[in-house]
Image (cartoon, rainbow, N blue to C red; front, side, top):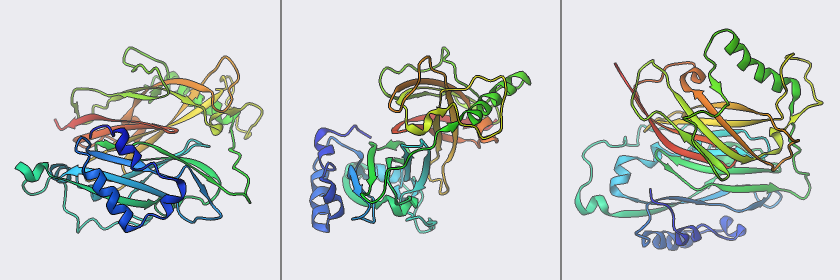
Length: 349
């Protein structure tokens, strides 16, 4: 995949209302323009910045893809298309198959990637341009109420740009995200302490070390083992990030659920990070897990405050099983930020 140029991005930067009115002729024009941009191969997304819930019943996302025949042989799109959507008020991330329409898809009629002989010569280099208009509400069963969402698509080793959409309605007030109760946050930290005191290796650590990647601007960075890992040996990944705190990340110090973990310092915020492992042609939900990152700050935190974090994770400890021998592409998602792919190879002994 090559980075999209300014000309490519302009194709998906439409007026909000135009995303609801694109017809076949308009799609043909856009496809032809994209096909002529020979310095680009990849996928870009466009979406309305705001959707009026009272006027519309869909959340349209325009997906433009330009790919060679060789790429289409290497990675069959309909077997490798995952929508990543994050609730930017609460920080939760979910994954969905892009073409399922909220239902289970039958893959038996779709050829496998890299099956039969690869295209060669001019045929391999010839390109096609394809537009797709996705209804994210239908795909993800999105609650049709005010909110703010970040949306990306992963097609194996191709990661799109991220679009941010706000759902709004005059008749409904915006959601007020619930903050994490203080005792619930302390319980989270207590589990980490217990794993260490029991002599067990904790599945995560949130202090920077020599392997922690550096990051200077808002976003997230990830590092993984470079050498192949023997089956059953386990492996760790390291990450670092800087994100603007979403409202639901902040801990409410005065709020309690009645279940106390005593002797533990209450974190000031808890950031949600989802780790995603992509395999070629996997037809069920990608392997993934969520990590809750405790943040301790010197000053009080408010929504929007730029906050740094780091982590070291034992991937198989979080999954609770050993990964089969295969190549995995690792992605990390925090709020509107997503990074990857980073390749990890598991080999049989």
